[in-house]
Image 1 (cartoon, helix red, strand yellow):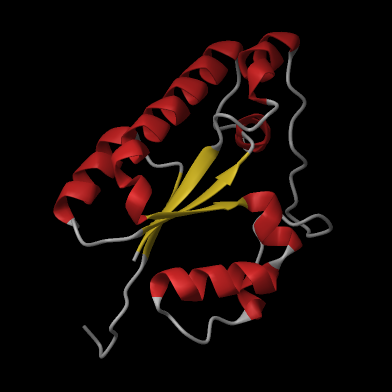
Image 2: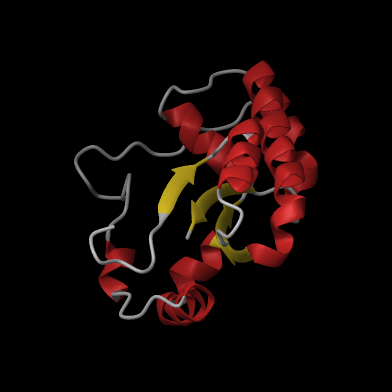
Length: 153
């Protein structure tokens, strides 16, 4: 175990079945859930050509809802972090992470590493949603069904 007392694993947009299996295999794990607005996630995936239609939007939302259901039994072992809060308050996020995981010395520099950063040479702006795609996410304005990025520690 390379002398580490705390290990972690990360997966963006896991599927519900994988999450349920991992929870069963790692019963002592604690979970960190970084959530982001589902429509924003879809816009990014659309720009990257991972999805392309209203039918894909429906499947995207259904997958996120299945993951949310799979997370219910893990609620007492989970720390939820909203993406917007994490970006706005890295120091506060680090405090919460260290308190929850027992890990110490998390460097604020981790917040400087970003994928698809505005101004980078390979930046892809989020795609515009069609009216049909937007309708799929219309009731998510409150963030009721965010798309999680899951970490286990």
